Length: 265
Length: 280
Image (tube, rainbow over all chains, first blue to last red; front, side):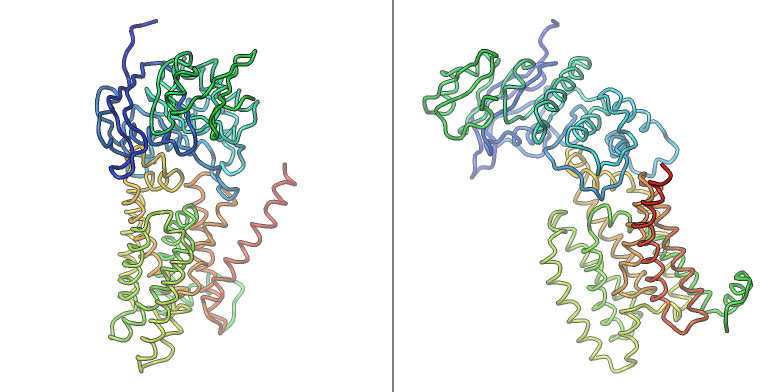
């Protein structure tokens, strides 16, 4: 493995708004090529972390750096897949057109005489195994198919970091596993750093390098072995919790009522 | 007068009348502009906002008539201010039907007041509501042309960012696109396009040129550029054919335009899918 190259660093980071702190005292480092899960209960501030990295929100205090700089909006090195609903059936637009906009949507003018974005779009769709979906309408795609299109849209500009906000929600277990394998494959092939927000950590465990666990206004970070322990999570939640493991390595956290992201399958 | 066997001769005949010439010129520009802007209206699910803008324009037109200037200036002023207001509320707010509806009802009421204060022709209100393309003056045609060219240049300039922000606002915003600014540009485009389309079909029938052609075109193609072209073609067919028939028949042009647009919509919505499945 090559020398560790820091992509994201957070120092004494406090997030939210001055009169409404979401979480505080976050100190962590994410290195190039790492596959990171961002988990925690609903409303804990997982998306807030993405908004900070995208430059859509500023830290209350402390610093967060990406590529050794304060985040700024429109960083071309970040590919972003927001949490979203499916398109309604009336949206009759070829999916390749959306991927294309991920490449050239920032450019002014009609762009009548260039096919570069079209080629880039097809390449990105090939990388996520979605070439067969290229000419299908966005409105008729299933949740899993749409996630592949969104992934292609994020990858088309060749980013170094991927921020994926709940790509696995609304997928059945088989689709969930397929999409995860795909994301993992793409991330490895391109040496991309990926942060993925999820509800349930268990399907992610085979792939993870790091966990960012956000709960109770605090953030715990480390390898899954470090974070997913009774001691670490008890300290995070501020109450005694226990991490149980089944024979397949799945975990369950007991002792907290709101236990999203930790139900055993 | 009635139709002859050769429509080309008919057309030459009717174009000898200056009012028909002006009607065809203004109608053509409006159909092109409405067909294009209408695509973004449909894509952004903003048809109610567009509808509201034209109603807000009604009070502007009535106010203009009251102070003795061309209604189009009142339309432009009121729809632009209304459009800025809706855009400034943000995209999610632009879909707040109840608030927009409340404002549009008030503006219509204001329009009724202005019309009643105006002691001239009672037909003035009628032509704002339902269009009066056959009475359009040369200076209004030229004004329509200038506005049309400005809209086309503006759409060409913002085409890809506007498409991106309309289809995928969150990603566009994260990529640093000025989504609020694009929303304002969009609403101003709708405001100006609406103001001129009102000359053809009136404020009440604005849907027939600003929404239905694009919605119909969307059934026929999946690439934005193709949809826009088809949308323009539909708006043009309806406007030209409507003017053509209205030259011979004693009924309003806007009735014919809305009927043709509606017939095309029905045919493509319900008959076209059946033909398509037969072929496959």
